[in-house]
Image (cartoon, rainbow, N blue to C red; front, side, top):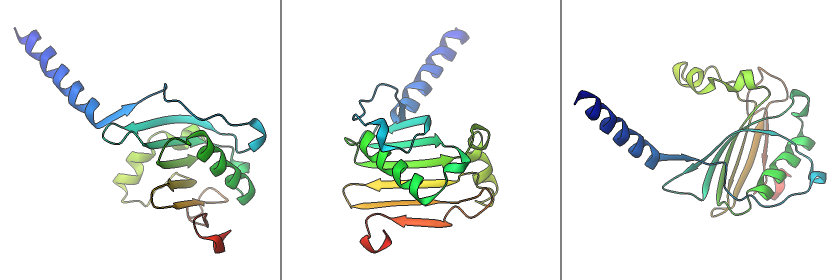
Length: 154
């Protein structure tokens, strides 16, 4: 009897946690060409159940690629690959090691330890599109800021 209650409770917990977040490998991405540039490794792709037109990504790129030209190509590639999504939020890292456990460090230190090297954000409804990144590990994440939605920033 105790085993049955445990299985039922576990099922309920899994059901309700599934209502909050949904991770999917099967979402249809728009086609892009290799010539666009901005190659990256996708580590995590999360769609919110209550808003499937919003995607949260965690990606990895090589440390040498944290420069304005490459990062602009990266932002363009992501925007093209997720053309059917209204809101895209991307956390950018320079290695899998820095990515793993970054949430814990960020939260427990009140943001003092931030292993991210960049952030890309696009909201098609408001027209907001921005990219922030550091050129070197240890530099502030907003060392370089590009607001694509502001023509004076380009």
